[in-house]
Image (cartoon, rainbow, N blue to C red; front, side, top):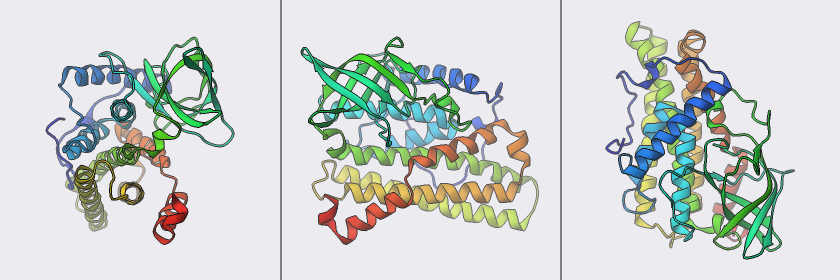
Length: 348
């Protein structure tokens, strides 16, 4: 994966989508992803898998590595993306050093109605409350977690102790991304180390760069879904399916080009001295999300129910990508971009 590049083309080769799987039950998917996540982190620590830091001059290689894993398994990509994002955050905010063998998550979702509180305790902090959408809840050894303090939102590093960081059973019902193990987690007096200052997690340039890494994962998932259409058209001539394949190829080519340009721009201005990082992230994520949504629709229309019913890998790819794309906030993000363009002073 270290030598892969963002490819605009729909692959015709045999890939991991041909592998056999035991089932799609949540427990099977979670155990499978957890084992593969541990193996991937071991390879990262050993230098066999490489994820250059965003803005290091090799952001294209970072996005290509995320794409490659996402083509293989989107749930695995969600876990690996969280781990390498955490390492980038720790480097950017001078957090505690990563230790080999430790698997990191980034738990920063803050939907209405859920609160995780941080209170001072001695020389450190303790966390109490509920945190939603904690990917890798049972497989991460450590996590970067956002929580509320009397001064405002801050980021904290915690060791994931299953006795104090307790997954809420039944809080993740989705079949899609089941392998990402993303339940709500209840925190009970969990010791924490502050990383950065108030709101520094979201104000740093890397917050925007990391969002484009997620888009690279979406793109990899769409490439994997499109392979089913390519195989179908190779086996039987059908002008309607051929038209869908052509449209899918155009969209994927455009998305790959957008990601490549974004990577170059990040490397040209890693500290965001031009103030373009937020608009770039909003544009890239919105466009890649729209491409992935069109790929899902066109592949489904061209191939019908058969691969969804008889090809477990394809069924998982479709279900996983459908859920993963909802990290994009649709019209809310588009409205933010419009406000940023029309009234920059209102978006500060």
